Length: 217
Image 1 (tube, rainbow, N blue to C red):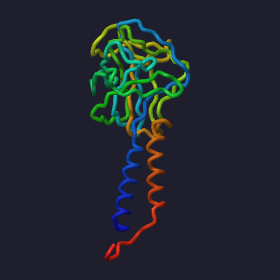
Image 2 (image 1 turned 135 degrees about the horizontal axis):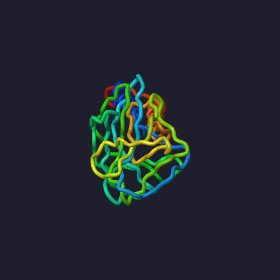
Image 3 (image 1 turned 90 degrees about the vertical axis):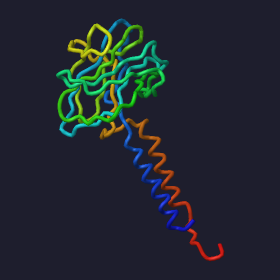
Image 4 (image 1 turned 120 degrees about the horizontal axis):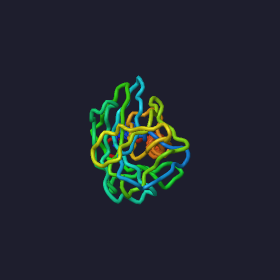
């Protein structure tokens, strides 16, 4: 393999590694454990604001207490604050689990066709909370830069229903969450693996001594 072929190979590998840095990050994460319950039926979620920079949603998720799967699947929907449906998907126990740092809880996410959100207010919620444990009233939670939390949203029903109820007395109903693929700040656990690949790629570029091809070899 000539030096030019090797440079092209490692250069392409490095580009691939850097490209994988553009991973999805959860919109909301909590800094202290929320309360949990399994009453129902409920549609549970929250309203949020997207800033001027916008954002791209690549996945919709449902809360999985202890990360041990659901009793039943959950329909997760994204709407405008006026109730126009933008996306919906069915989240199941076979969907990948993204653990919340320092806990055994997390959200299972189903990928959707990416949707670019412009500045404004939106609602994300998951339905069919009856038996499965949901999270609510988190003493402390964080939201990605460029976004802000508005209020919780809920309805006492099941199915694909836009939740219109809300209360400032409860610090969030986190039946649902979503993934932002162009987030300015990714969760450390999510970004660590691709970053390690980048270092490996760089090591490959620097550790191999070039050998020029000559006739007869």
